[in-house]
Length: 460
Image (cartoon, rainbow, N blue to C red):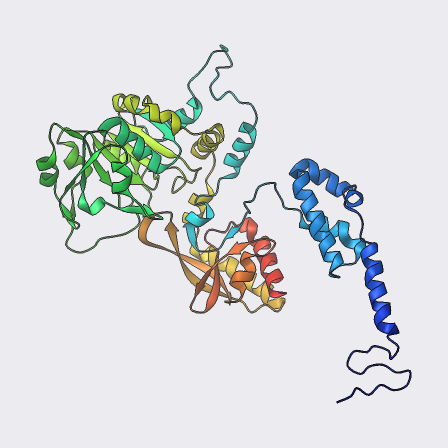
């Protein structure tokens, strides 16, 4: 069918004048707008971008300018707004990691970096970022023991440890002990403790890689002290007991206690995993370093970024002679921690309550009060939200089966992806077709940021 265009009128489908003048005008306007897009050098003279270049580096700032110019070319923003858009696109830091709000209900979420550092630990890291006395005695001017104040703080927290050492993670602590004490020898271990520690890494593979031989005893569900005694011989490096921290076996079970095995007069290494230094009233079944050493463990290994609430590191605590052998092994140098970790660890050990400890001890009634207040405020803004009871977990391979009563904001499931990718990333969980934002691991001072992120997500 032919288009009907009245004399001197416009095309009904396109709005183009019969003589094409309107279309030409729009093309000219577009071309004019593109010509008005400021040059990169001109945009970079913006004082905000000059300051950002000093903070983030020229490459990051130029990329933000390029993206802003591209928005102007495709008509998303006027050319005059390129500078503002570039400033808005700048990241908070030069690194690629983004700070998120952990509203998953998992206190120690491995994918989110496990324990968040305390304010004291963050300040200590910032202080240690420049030149420090990490291996220098400022009084005498001679070399000193590396990280001596952090090691002293760790020793003070676990009085039953005659000596302590720190490496770069929990698995490294176990590797160092196995290499130093059992390379070419037997490590006696219960079959029920041959665990996978996550992401496909299995304890047997880790230990065998050190040159040690594994001598498995007992069965999956029952291992007695007699099983250990029958396996011990001249080639035994040590007996290893591993806390199965990421699963539980119930029913017809038996596990020899540390004290029973220690009576066999061979070194006993206990990997408690989660980094609990002393008994915790909320986690009665979680082993701790102090109790294990008092029971007769020769060495205890643990992680620093789990229940301790500190930076990623591996803790070794125990007998002085064995620790000397372990800490002087050549591999210890390859596994040592840097000054930032030492600073954060010491501040965690000596400073105020950590965010992890605060999250574990949070009062469920107070969490619900916070959820109700947030839900009321957001509902008044037209958000489909309600406060609900929730069940949080410890996470980080610790306290399997333990649930912590909590409270959450319940939102439509479509919020989950929008919140994760927003200006302030919020990670929740999907449950029963709803997006839950659990407040147990969210500090109260982040409530306003959380509410702002939800409002932003609601606006799409």
